[in-house]
Image (tube, rainbow over all chains, first blue to last red; front, side):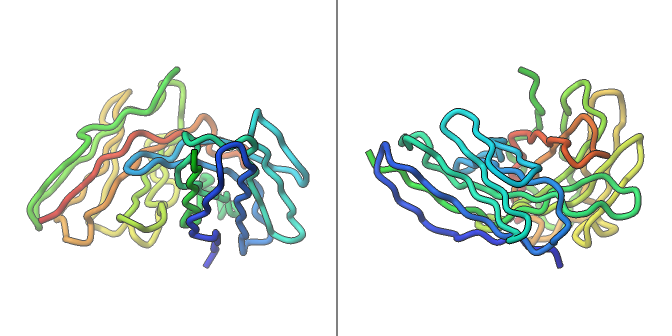
Length: 115
Length: 116
């Protein structure tokens, strides 16, 4: 069973601080990794994707991938109250015999940014 | 910006009834997916669809479920005889090229299904 694990939180940070969200995955040969943001009652919204080891920055967001440790993280700099949401880590497991890639999600980390 | 759309936003049905959830994927996307999220739980893959065929399905997607692309724009999920445990948020997603690992899936707003 391919698993994606996240701390459920809640993670509470003050406005302007750095929020650090972590994710581990069990399938060593997973190829691509995504962070989605989900507001309560809404659908997942793509924040970042990362495919290679190292860091990838996009505005206030930085995704970090370490395939050897099977670990992916998301840093949010200068956190804003509007960043308060559940952050979902999603992994594309190895494709099985001609099928399309599907996403395996973690349960998500609830982030609260306090004004 | 193109979006995946879903109708209805909320569907209430009686146990044993059939429901059809509708999705309009982004127009140039070729790969379509259904996921579900039971309240408080993780988003779970149900099925992927390409070239008018199911590409992959999860163990959740049993004989009670079916998918169809009845025309050039809609993608539907049918649940033949709903159970209480089918109550969940159902998300449709689409992507340009589901055959590559860097493909990105975009999600619709979801349909909340409540089975009474």
